[in-house]
Amino acid sequence: GLSERLQNTIQRMRGKGKISEADVKEMMREVRLALLEADVNFKVVKNFVKTVGERAIGQDVMSSLTPGQQVVKIVNEELTDLMGGEESKLTMSTQPPTVLMMVGLQGAGKTTTTGKLASLLRKKYNKKPLLVAADVYRPAAIQQLETLGKQLDMPVFSMGDQVSPVEIAKKAIEHAKAEHLDYVLIDTAGRLHVDEALMTELVEVKEIAKPDDILLVVDAMTGQDAVNVAQNFNETLELTGVVLTKLDGDTRGGAALSIRSVTGKPIKFVGMGEKLDALEPFHPDRMASRILGMGDVMSLIEKAQANVDEEKAMELANKMKDNSMTFDDFLEQLQQVKQMGPLDDLLKMIPGMNKMKGVENMSIDDKQMAHIEAIIKSMTTKERTDPTLLNASRRRRIATGSGRPVQEVNKLVKQFDEMKKMMKQMSGMGGKKGKKNPLA
Ligand code: GDP
Ligand code: MG
Image 1 (tube, rainbow, N blue to C red):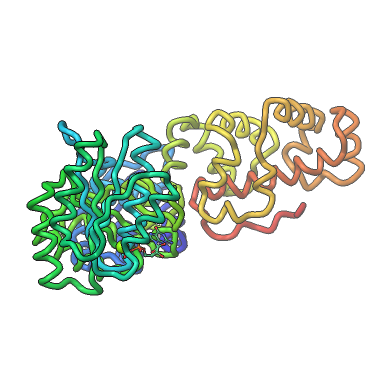
Image 2 (image 1 turned 90 degrees about the vertical axis):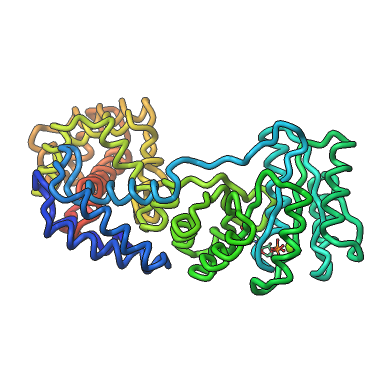
C-alpha cells in the first residue's frame, strides 16, 4: 500500500521548510501507483496527480508536520474533494411517500441493500418503509425480499411474477399512500450485463414511479467494470446516487473514486457486510484513507496538529531522531497524548500499530497516570535519561520508592519503549526500523 511505498520518500523529505518540486515528483509517482493499484481509472489518476502536484509544490510546511505528512494531507484532501467532500443524503419528498428505485446488475446487492436501507430509515429516522418486489425475473427474487421483510418485520408489496414491474410499482405507490407509509423502496431486476430490454423496462418504471432517488447498486469488488456499469446506467436513467456494496471485502475501493469522477453522481451509502445493519453513509474522507491504504492516519495528523504544542513536538521529533527521548519527555508526552483522547484509540489509527502486540493494554486513565508519575519521579535523573541503566535492583528500588509493584515498573519501561516506537511513527509515519531497544 501507499503507506509502505511512501516511507522512504517521507524519510528523505524530513526537516525541510518547503516542499520541493523533486520531492513532489517522487511522492506523486508513488501516489499514482497506489491509486492504480486500488483500481482507480487511469484518466482519473492522471488528472488527480497533476492537481495535487501543482498544489503541493512550494507550499510551506506546517511546523507540526513533516513535509511528507503534509503532501499526504494534500493528497487526502483532494481525494476527499473528488469524492464529493461531504456526505450526500437521500432526497426526501415533501409529499410522502418518498420513492427510491434500486437498480443495478444481478448479484450487485440490490435486494439486500433495499432491506438494509429500509431498516436504516426506520431505525434512524423513524420512517415507515414499504419494500416492493419488482424483480419478476430472477427465480425466488420475490421470496428473497419477502424473507427480508419478515426478518425486519416490515411490509413487502408483491404481485407475483406474472405482472409487469411497471404495474407493480404503480400499485405499490398507491398502496403506500393508502397505508400512510413514508417510503417506497422498489427492488428491480438486474441482468448479468447491461442490456437494452432491461434499460427500457427500468425507464418505464421510472416514468411511472417518479422516484426521488434512483440508486445504482454496484459491487465494489468489480473495480473498473463498476465504472462502466455506472456510466451506462447513468446515461439511460440519470441516477441520483450510488450504493457501493461489499466494501467489507479486501477491495481498496478505487471504484468509488472513479465512479464519482466519471459519472459525477455521489456515492450515498456503502455496504459493509451481508447482515441487515451493515449499511453506512458514505464518508469521502474515510474512503480516501482507505484508497491510500493509510488507515486513519489523516485523523491522527489532524489530532496531532490540533493538540500537540508545535515547538515541543519538533523538539521531541528531534530527540526521537537521535534516540534521546527521556522518561521526563515520556511523561510530558503521555500527558499531551492523553488530551488527544484515549491512547489506544490513537494507536489504532496508526497503520500497522493496531496489529502491534501490547497496544490493547496501553490505555491510560488518571489513576494510572498518577502511578506512572510516581514511578518516574522515583528514578534518578540519570536513569530517566538512560533507561538502559534500569537493571533489576534499580527497578526494585524504584518500585519501593514509588510504592508500586515491580511488575508495574517493568510494564512502564516496556510502555516507554512502545511509546518511543509510536512517536517515531507519528513523526515520520513509520520510517526505517529503529535501533533495537536494549530493554526489549
Ligand atoms: P441483487 O441480485 O442485486 O439483488 O443482489 P443480492 O441482494 O441478492 O445480493 C447478492 C449477494 O451479495 C448476496 O449473497 C448478498 O448477501 C451479498 N451482499 C450484498 N451486499 C453485500 C455487502 O455489502 N457485503 C457482502 N459481503 N455481501 C453483500
Ligand atoms: Mg435481487
